[in-house]
Each structure stands twice: as structure tokens, then as C-alpha cells.
Amino acid sequence: MNFLSQLTGSFSQPCAENPTVAMVEAAFRHHGLDWRYINCEVNPKGLGDAVRGARAMGWRGFNCSIPHKVAVIDHLDALGESASIIGAVNCVVRREGKMVGENTDGKGFLQSLREKIEPSGKRIVLLGAGGAARAIGVEVALSGASRITVVNRSDQRGYELTTLLRDKTPAEVEYVSWNHEFSIPAATDIVVNATSIGLFPDTEARVPLNLESLTSEMVVADVIPNPPRTRLIRDAEARGCQVIDGIGMLVNQGVIGIKYWTGVDVDPQVMREKLEELFGTPTKTPS
Ligand code: NDP
Image 1: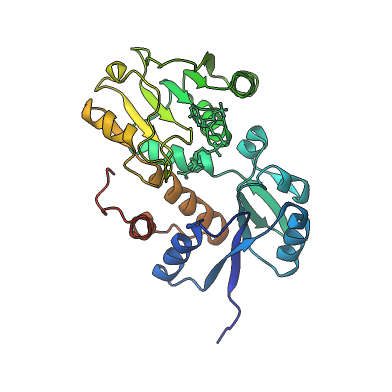
Image 2 (image 1 turned 180 degrees about the horizontal axis):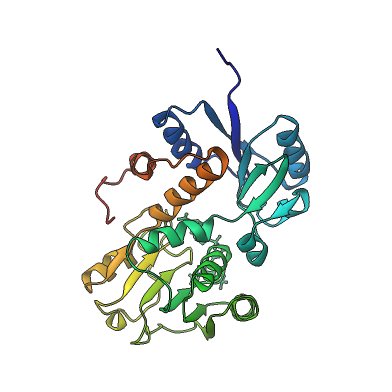
């Protein structure tokens, strides 16, 4: 008999609406893992104490989300490659007693993308330049995307991401200021909405794109997990594009995080079903 569960969890603020705990615990249960995931409300002043507490209690790792993704780095022992380029950590893993920061945002996206298309050698339009866009841009660039067009509303953030990608990755990168309805260049292979446009409750918000410029050869991905069938996804489907919803990215981050912590490859479908149950959407979404 062993009454000591292995502990993981999440530090963020606010955290009450973060569904990751339900998704991860569904996977732990499905695979018979005696592990727990504890969703903790941690304010910025308490972050150092929270990480020290996790160390003292032998936690195997934890996720961190807004507002801790950058600040947590000061409390860790080492960083993985993409986390160090992105400059943000959302998953901490205890390896040989050391707390190592990884970034699974972009890796989760990449895994979803690869189910449809291999990014190597492809031309990508990346809408947005915030945290999600940064993580996605770095991962697709490190995976060999040949050209990335960053499109953003605020130029300062747009330039920062463009400079980061140019300096730290081999991709060719251009920047377009998003002050008009953007037309996707004809040679584009992959379009990614990495903005927060369309997130619940503003579900009918429209990404300012010239829909006529979307062609059926393009893959269109949206990071918005709630609701997964965003207006962009529906518009792109109507234009004949292959589409990728934001649930895949969220689920794959869970899969990668659990693999880091436990070494077990968990079934993504169990986690997708749990999220779809929570978000009240049909189980059948594009795979
Ligand atoms: P940030 O706040 O860091 O960035 C938001 C981005 O959206 C910025 O580029 C911002 O532009 C842009 N934006 C917001 N509103 C508009 C608008 N009306 N018109 C044009 N651009 C706009 O957020 P994150 O990058 O952290 O998150 C973005 C989204 O990604 C969130 O909705 C989040 O839910 C989702 N996400 C999904 C994940 C998943 O696993 N599926 C994982 C992580 C995030 P500007 O710079 O001009 O303000």
C-alpha cells in the first residue's frame, strides 16, 4: 500500500476558469496514475514562495500561466531550448532534483499542426504577436518553416517578435502592420490566428481578413479553444481550407506536460472529450 500520490499542479491568477486541472486529472484517472494536479491561485508576490513550497513538498512539476510565465524563470534552475528563446515558461519539470522550465504552448500547437501538415519549408502567416504567437513563431521557425509573416495591430509588439525570430531562428521573417483587412499572400501554406479574437464571450468577433484571399490549398489554424469552432474556423472551412482548432493545442500541451512529468504517453482523446464536455461542444471536431 502507498498513500503518497505524486503531485503536480498549476500556479496562476485568476485560475478559477482554467480547465487544465479537469483535463489532466481525466488523463491520470484513465491511465490509472496515482498522480494529482492541484489548481492554485498564486499572486505575483507569492510566486517565489509557491515554487519553494513545490520544491519542499516534492512536486514533480507544475504549469504556470498568466501572470507568471516570465517571472517564474527567476525561481528555476535551468531552461529548455525553446523556453529560453521564447523567454517564457508554462511547464516546470523536476529533473534530478532541479526545476527545469519548458514551454509547451508552441510544442502543443506544433503537434496539432503536424497532424495536417509538416511546417518544414512552408510559408506561414502568423496573426498576432503576444505570448501565444511568440511560442508558435519560435517552434515553427525551429521546425524549418521557410518564411513567416508576422501580422500585428501594435507595431511595437510586432517588431519585437519579428526581431526575435530573425535573430534566434533560421526563418526568413517579414512584418506587416495590421491596420486594414489583411489579404493572405497567394503562396501561403499555413495561416495561424494567434490573437485573442473570438475567445468566449466575444465569440462572433471577426479576425480582420479578406476571406476571398483564403484558398483551399491553405491550412488555417486557430488558437482559441473556447469555443473551438470560431468564426474564422467556420469561414475557412466554407472556403475549402483544412482547419485546426485550439482544443488540439491545449490537449497536446497536456499530453506533453504529462509525458515530461510521468514518462507516460497519455491518450489525447480522453482529454479532448473532457474539454468538449466542459465547453459544451459536440465531440466531433476536425481531427
Ligand atoms: P496576449 O494578450 O499576449 O496577445 C494577444 C494578441 O492578440 C496580440 O497580438 C494582440 O494584438 C492581438 N489582438 C487582440 N485583440 C485584437 C484585435 N481586436 N485586433 C487585432 N489584434 C488583436 O495573449 P496570448 O498570446 O497569451 O493569448 C492569445 C490567445 O491565445 C488567447 O485567446 C488564449 O486563449 C489563446 N491561447 C490558446 C492556447 C491553447 O492551448 N489553445 C494556449 C495559449 C493561448 P496587440 O499586440 O496589438 O495588442
